[in-house]
Image (cartoon, rainbow, N blue to C red; front, side, top):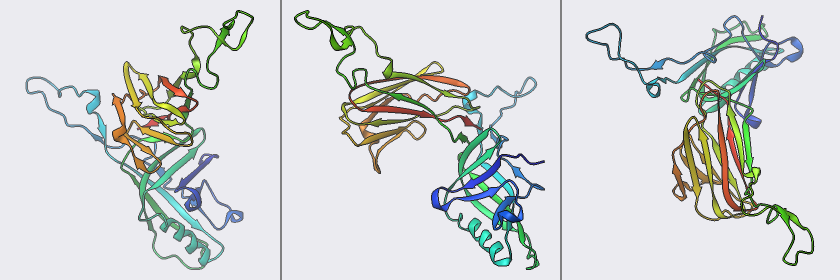
Length: 302
């Protein structure tokens, strides 16, 4: 029996197409999964891209380092049925699938407690011509995802603030005259402020690449450090980030953008450490101003 909480979404926003778990006449017109073929290729690993060198004087092949265990593109197939009250509605549902052609779309699968997505291009083959009196048309939808990783829809976020943000000091101060307490309290230069550090987690089966967004105003730029799995990545934007603007740094593509402008050359990076599978990363922010930093990680599966 197919799962109760299940749907497939293709595309985003107004151009999103939804394929239901199952359909009744009250759902027409709609698209639904044909469970005789179901969903194939979403949860399994794609084909491996590993070259083995056979041992000449003993059994087997030479060991393969972890960083050389790579995978091909992910190919997903879905049995789909277009339902409608009459041929016109069926054709309209087929046209929705056709609207996905010629572009890369987000493919999201919601399945019980799992909710992940990937990006790929879609093709669809419909079965032979149907009797126009039948209120459905069966077909097979194929999505090829060049990046085989599936990402969790719900992210793990760490919000970081400059240590002295929004107040000009923390802790206890009696003032120059010693007349009494002055707020905000100040415990001295050695005090720490946990607002500029946090942890993100990747509960997936593959390394996850953080995306860092720096929101101004940050008076002299900012440095974000991400430490995970024994490796440390440091990303620095060495110029002021004005209020109302932001700089986004993508650890996977190793690029930075401000709006639609590529500002990668304005970023200095040491390492691009991913968050290991089923692991955590400690994040810290060094900056001045009243802006913030968001470090976002999504559970990643291969």
